[in-house]
Image (cartoon, rainbow, N blue to C red; front, side, top):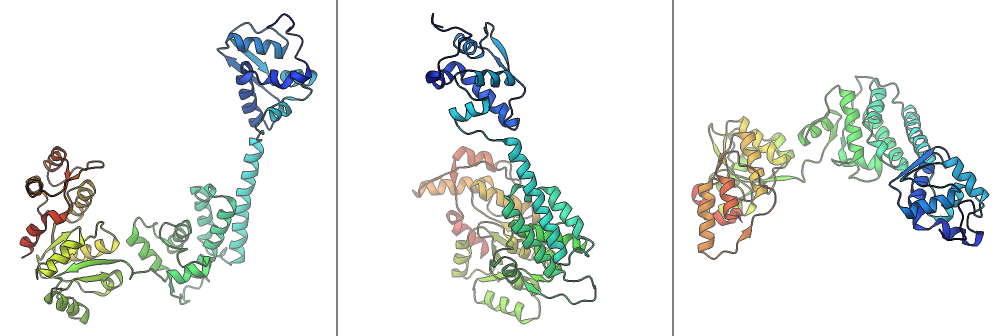
Length: 432
């Protein structure tokens, strides 16, 4: 403090802003701003500053017109507001902080406004339920309460939340137009139903918020549990007379010879006899009779190149390709073959995603490893080095191989990723 500055005399008006923005007051304004924004911009309560240094004590003493000598100071915001109004600053605490910037936010008002917006979402939802004549359905009130309690809509902006819940109500009203159990339901395609509700054929695709809300309503209406996976979701859609898309996703096969007597099984047998690969859709799997001779051994691979090479080499052993990941259509086919008594042998890539997929197939179907043990990996890795094949480094998070405790340590030791193509001749030999 200079000889001309005294604790009871704030700086002249021309220097007021420069005085207020000196470094010694930075912590005071930060704490005051936080408290005001929580208090609805009202100067109420006390803030406590600890660990004050000499520069801060001097600045606070000048500002508050009282000596601050310790390392801790308690400042009442009403007193600070009065002091600022009586000084050359000439305005209250809130106006002073606004002048120094940035603008204050009334967080209490923001919270209240957000709560009011959320309330309007549910008022609008209830109004839509009444307008759509869904209020007479015994499950509707529980559906609204559940989606409110889960909080998914609350995390959306109010416009999006209102739009999605309105679309969900209209979709459910379309599926459940009345309470007469004798009424014949209309069958919808999911894309057609989505277009009717949202204008987009993809509006009810898996993973969308709208599809989750509608499926929750269907489950309540039908008195069943929420679906846990894609096959269960498809089954639930069908319970509401909605046909999901079952033709765009396929599973690649070779050599399947089911014993069923319809033209569908005969077509598969004929293609197998001509060593032709076949892409089978979910829709076909619903109608195929996939009985196989008891104990049929089915080989499962990860990469389509294995199927292509097996077809070119006229291999006859049944072969199914996961095409990198076991999707719903792949698992549906494997489930059907397992139910008919087939056994499985699995081969995939020697990398961490490949090991994770192999674990899934081995665990779900009790599949035997097909040239997937540590000795196989070591042999193929050595062969690629001898042949001068460019090496691919292992990357990612290791996954334990449930069928062979030695495989992962061996892979870590050699540090090489091996795709199925590196073992193609060996796989073809087995398929012969």
